[in-house]
Image (spheres, one colour):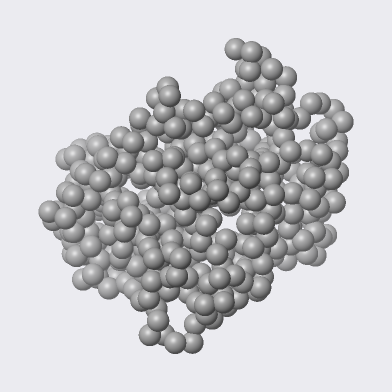
Length: 453
């Protein structure tokens, strides 16, 4: 009670990256800290602004893109991966405005710390200049962070600018779980190009922070945690956010719930849930291969097709009438954690983003992995070959391979083994939350740590 009473007088400032996969865990963390007695201020851009009415107990302050005449941001695309250009602009030019905003907050009340997304690497120098402790939220896995930290080595080994395509199936030196093609899939040619520099700065400033919060749990990545503890002096806190709060309230898209009566009527473990995240895109040809593969598998499916997912189409216009039939349902967006927790769902075909992957782990749902970009290939390899909770399909879209992968997980004997592994991981996550468990203790330590700052 003493810690909670003290924390009620302290404010925590949180600064998420303005993308769905980063907003979700940061606002889950905000909810968690609020439940522990802290006052919460959220700094955010107007771009991809959250629905503030869903968070009446938080204070929101909008920064960095308030000037419509700022040519650095006014002409930037607001959709797809091109929107990530904002990251470079804000990391390069955002320090003055952030410092001004923080000075106003610090002058008006007692602030314990700022917690920023790790990719907001410019915030470390600002926090240091104000003697304000900065913790980081890393929205991907520990394994992924360690791989990013090894990019200079990967560059030296020639993986990033690979000329010899026969090396694609080689194991990555120092990371035998990965294949060279997983590094190539990142899509940049050097650790010193803009993306490489941003990731390098992220790693450097994460190591310089006052603490790291991970959306994970010890039993999932124990060897990686040992490496992080050995290499980084700042304390690490592993907390499985989906076990505490859903991400529904932070969704930037309206969620369709009309399919639930249909889902409720399906037998247990009979439905494949399909969703490729909030930013991915496919060509029309690939979209049709996915559709035919799902139908040919003869398994029931719930497929999230986000508007803009099919290049050149508004939604599902290329889909032939009657192809999906009664076995499938297509929606624009869904409350994912609620779907994954539904007893009718037997597996999840995912783009392998960390939020989706981890939500599936927390619900004990087996997966099919089709990574598109960034850390997704790392997540897919680790979950396939280490945790063994899914099959790696990739994104070379052929209907026969898709159908076979679906049946492997949903019907075949191999799938039962994979689903059992997923159930075991869920049980480990559940146990970690019990008093004395690793996640329980990590959360208690985080609260005490922030209260002491």
